[in-house]
Image (tube, rainbow, N blue to C red; front, side, top):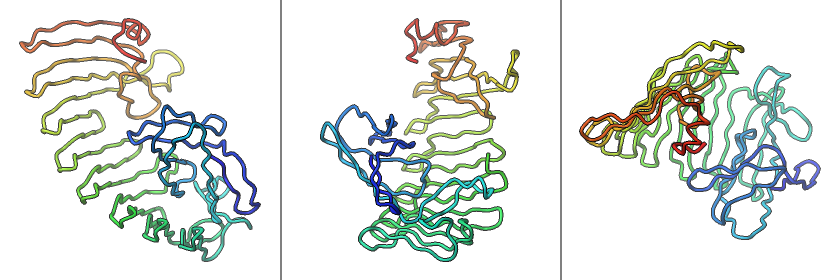
Length: 312
């Protein structure tokens, strides 16, 4: 990707952090400004450090492709000196007063009122077709965000407490195009709880502080994770570990598999994927008549991968 600087009009290859994702959600990060893709097709550009940039889906067919992005007049930068996460700037520095930015065809891209680069009350961001994309309302210690798709359907509503920028408390609800709830999520003091639904309103996933349940489209329990924190016995003691038990079930509710493993974490909840495990206490499988088969016991992740039971 190459970027055209709005202020200097210079064109440079962008080597900052961005990545492309295919239609299945697989991510491909850039290496020194280049993204190496497995195949031709449609890809979406994501730019985490510039959250309000809207990129189109690009159709890549040639062996070598260059995507040109024209920087906005209003730019978002890190605002550590101001005690906030982001500040807004233009070619003259931090924004003050009312400002607008436009797409190349003259449609409003962004509108807001600022003081020393910080929004005073709200910011409105628009899709290239002029339909609102995101509305952000700033209040003391609170941030309210409402997001829309290009057809003006509500995609997400969220609320953030801004007292702790390192781990903010928040609630967020995302919606399917038909208006049904997709995910209802909340985080308090670093503990995330959420409920996810299939498009037809059936429960798909629910997670609390200590467990996670996953359901089939038919509504039966498919997988359950339970975990508990275990204090590290060796330095550094701040590096916690969790003991997780993953139990799988068939469509009739019979237990088919149970795995107990340890995974390290600095967070208040673990990464639950088997690929994050460091040590396996046991791995059991169960036949339809309930007979138990011990696959392994007391093995490191390296030994499990070497045995061919898991790809790491």
